[in-house]
Each structure stands twice: as structure tokens, then as C-alpha cells.
Length: 568
Image (cartoon, rainbow, N blue to C red; front, side):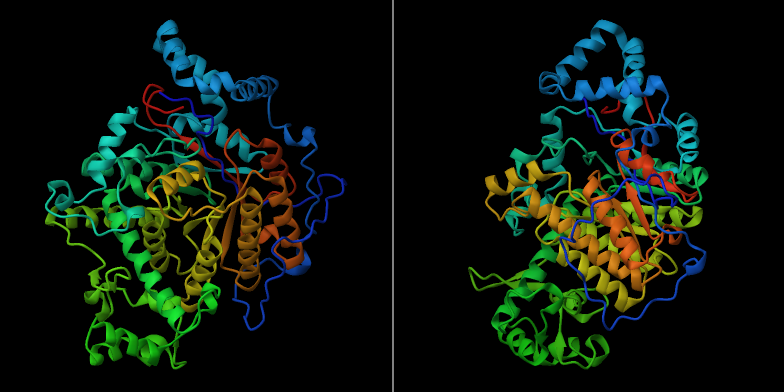
């Protein structure tokens, strides 16, 4: 059992609005600048009447009396103890050995009691629906709501984790040695990085065992969704797609999406459009048709049927969203999933063949996602799909987008997660916002910085592909604010869009509050939520929840099972 200081994820929502203090707030300049909203019409919504709304409060994160008045003295003492222990380099370097030694010396019963009094009690809401209820009710009394998450991980050795990963991330053909993977190396399984827990301290990791285990994870997520629905009428729940199916499918689908997007950029370069922002890159359809025909991908008649006024409009140009839609199963192009290999000049299939069993596993994964989304819709809970490693993420984002198309009709029930430490984060956000506008569904997003930086950098360097992470902390900070500013601008013109600002950074929270005030986004509209990990940042969480009785959401982990099974 490994010691993880971040176990329960607190994500809470709209700040309440009444003055907390008169302390001045620095009026820092926007790192992202203003995003023009010219040409966009406001979407009808249900915002509160302007005249009835009080001004946004001045939130003072330095007011410890307000920040900690929800905590009892013994809880503050525990927080201080845990903080000191977590800040000890010696403890962190040897935490697993110390935990095993402590368990042997005390026995399981006393060990469990010790953990619940310290680390477990600080970061985990409880073991089941009954045990988490007192904390949920206590926090709600101080304006902080809850998001339930499942915090148990298997207690696997690195060797066991590596074996499971290699087995579940390679196809039957690859395992039998009768064929080599045509996926790019970024989207292939690599034994050196088989244990995805390595270097990750703030995110749960699931390893595929079998379909029954995935069904078990789904049932646990369903219980979390039900508990969230009972605990609040404004609740959230979080899921990970790697818990719901064989990761081989996510790797292969990510490879397809990446190659298809790269093909678009290659065509853009041929038309002199390289280097433009994703939404500004528009290709001439006639020139594109000629290029595709010369490659021999399909006949000219077939190609012309892909690019029609019905599918692309009458502009004569095609952007990345139009291009991505061409591999949708509703188009004839889906059977021509080939792209040119720029090294060999040969056309290669995008998606390798699945065995009958692999096809069934892929179908079951999609079915589990659908069951969870329907349950969330039924009980009125928003479902946040967590971001994961970059070699899974293109597929995760695309599958989440498909759920949003289906379930985000009246309001955003499905939230996608955007990792702002990625170089392409802004492109990803702007493309999805634009897609939601065009197709008429409600945009819902959670913005995070990211949890896999060390692992991603090491993997890219070792395997030999471009590091996907921003080069510096400052670049990531600027990227987060740039993405957030763009989304807040969208919220101003679209009353049905929502965002979760998942950040422990005071500057980011202040930036958000300032932009909300400038854009006229009031907490009563319930469009902007803030989120922190349970027990990690009370000095931010509770001041945001204090002012006016508008629910703030706090993300807590519901840990079903005993401590021996959980990675606390």
C-alpha cells in the first residue's frame, strides 16, 4: 500500500456572494488578454435578473478566521500534523516501507484506526454512503458541496502492473508475433512505462484485468452517482475511462485521431496555411480534392461525395472540425481510413483489424459509458470525465464529446477535462467550444493543469517523440489563464455553458473572480464552479463558499472497502 497524500478530490462550485472582508484584491492584468466576442449572439438562458443581484464579494484568502471556522480544533491539529509529515523528504522517500512496517507492528486494526485519524481522515470522505454523509452535511452548512469519486486502487507490485499493462495494451495479433504494430510509437505500449502509477501522485490508476472487473468499476461509479444525487441537487461525480474497458482500444483510437489530424496539417502546409491557429486553418476544398485523388485513396466521384454543401456548407473551404467529422461513421469516408506514410510514400490503414473478442470488448466499453451517462441524467448529477495520459487522451476526449452530443441537449451534464499543461490545450478548448456552437449542444468543461507531467516528459524523452508538455511553469500558468479566459468569454454569450475551475492556485482563482465581474458572470447563474482536493486547500475552498447561500461543490472520494485495499 502506497501513501498518497492526495486521495479525495474536492471539486466545488459557484462561489457564494456576500462581502467577506474589505481587504483589497490585486488587480493583476489578464495574462491572456481580451477575447473578442464580435459576431456572437447571446444564447438564451436562465440567468437571474440583473437588478436583483448583489455585487461580487471581495474574497480574502488571508483571513484564516473565515477560512477555518468550519474546522474544529482537533481537525486543525490533524491538518497541521499531516502537513508536517507530508513535507518531510525522509518520510516521502520511504513511505511504502514505513507503512508496511507500521502495519506489522500495530496490526491491521490499530493501523486502520491510525490512518483514519491522520492521512485517511484528512483526505478521504469515507468508506461508504453512510460514512460520508456527516462530512457532506457539515461542509454544506458552510456553503461547500461535494463531488464523489472512487478512490480505491489495486495493491499491485510494479511487475504485476507492468504485465497487466502490456497484456491489455497490445492486440492479439501483436501478442502472437504474427504482425507488428503500425501505430506510432507514442501510441504503443512500452514495458519501461508499463506501471502508469510511476511518478503520479495525484490521480488514481486503473489496470485492465477482465471484463468482469470493468463491470465492477461501472457498478461502483453508479453507486457514486446515486450517492451524489441523494446528497445534493447540484452534484457532480467523476469517472475514468481506463476503468471501463481495455486500454488497447483507447491507444488505437488515439492513434487514428492523431494521424487524421496530422494529415489535415500536412494538407494545410501544402496550401500555405501552416502555423495558423487551429480555428483559422481553412483549406480550399477543390485543391484538397485534387490532392486526395492523386494519392489514390478513392475515386474522384467518391471524393466529391464527401465534400458537399450539405456536409460542409457553401464556403468552398474546410476547417479542422469539418475534417474530423469526415471520419464519423455516418460518412462514406469511414471505410477509406487510410493516410499516406510520409516516410515510405505508401498508403496505410488508420485502424488495424480487431478480433471478434476485441470488437466485443470495445462495444462493452461504449455501453458502460452510456449506462453511466443515463444514470447521471436520471438523478440529475453532472458527470466529469477525467483526463489521463496523452497516449489515451485523444480517444477519451472524442468519446466524451460523443456523450456530450447525446446528453448535453438542455444543459451540460457531461464535462470534458482539459489539461492546460499541454501545448495544444488552447486548440483543444477552442475547437470543442466551436463544435458545441455549430451543433447546438451545451458545452461543459473542467480545466486542470495536469497530473502526469514527470511521467509524460520521461516517456517522450525515452521513446523519442515530442514532449507534449509546456516547457515551463510560467507557460502552463499562461495557458491555463488563456483557456479559462476563452471559456469565460463563451459563458458570457452562452448562458447554458458551464466550467469547473479546478485549481489550488490563488492567482488563478482571483483571475477567475475578476473576469467574472468584468464579464457580468454572477455566481447566481451557476455557470462557474471551483474545485480543490478535499483537505488540500481549505483557505481557498471555504472563503469561496461563505458569502451567499449558493452551493459550492467539493470533490470527496468515497472509498468502498477497507484500508488494506485502498491506496491511501
